[in-house]
Amino acid sequence: MARNREFKPETVVDAALDLFWRKGYNACSMDDVVKKSGVARYGVYQEFKDKDQLYYATLKEYIDNVRSVVIKPFIRDAEDSDYDTLVDHFDLIMQVLEEGVYCGCYAHQAAIERGKDDPKVKQIVEDFFTEAEDVYRKTIQNGMNKDQIRKLPVEELSTYVMGIQRALIAMSKQSRPIAEQKKYVRCALELLKS
Image 1 (tube, rainbow, N blue to C red):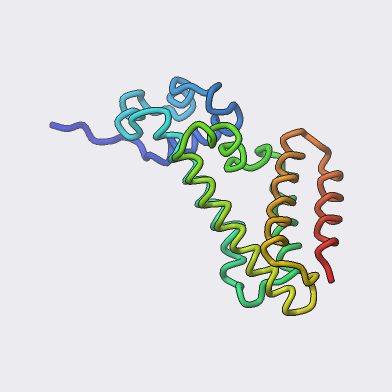
Image 2 (image 1 turned 30 degrees about the vertical axis):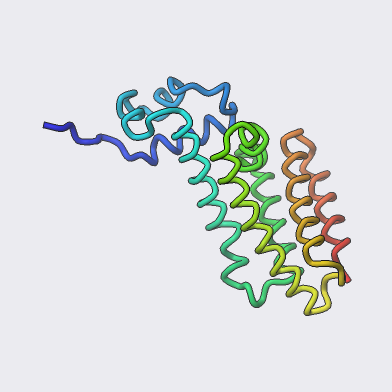
């Protein structure tokens, strides 16, 4: 008779996400995940097969969470999104960074740490960044239509806004003071205004 699973896969994913984010992929072992999750080794391997499969699951979980908290407000109010929506969006990012639970963005970390060596990680992260940039593009266009944002090529401005996000994540990873990060974001967004 087959043994019933005694855990939820989310327990392992949550534990692994925390470990991979804090320690990095290479410094985290499956033993660390087993210990932190409290799930038996055979259960972890039965569900995820290996460390890479578990890493993909953590990355997808992170992206789903970011979509629901950070990106969905843009999509839900796509017709009304504008410059003020961008300001609110970056205020939310700053709030998360200020809480200091984690340093930076896990997707950015994955792109740097594993993206160039693992095609699946690269694809997951690129799809997520493309989705975010599409949302920025629509918001910028709306802001231009309302004469809130400078009349420059939308593609270039959406790349610029992604650059603000990437710079903010890098500053966070470098443990730059939150006040410095806020000044950077405020100035960078101010440069968008018409």
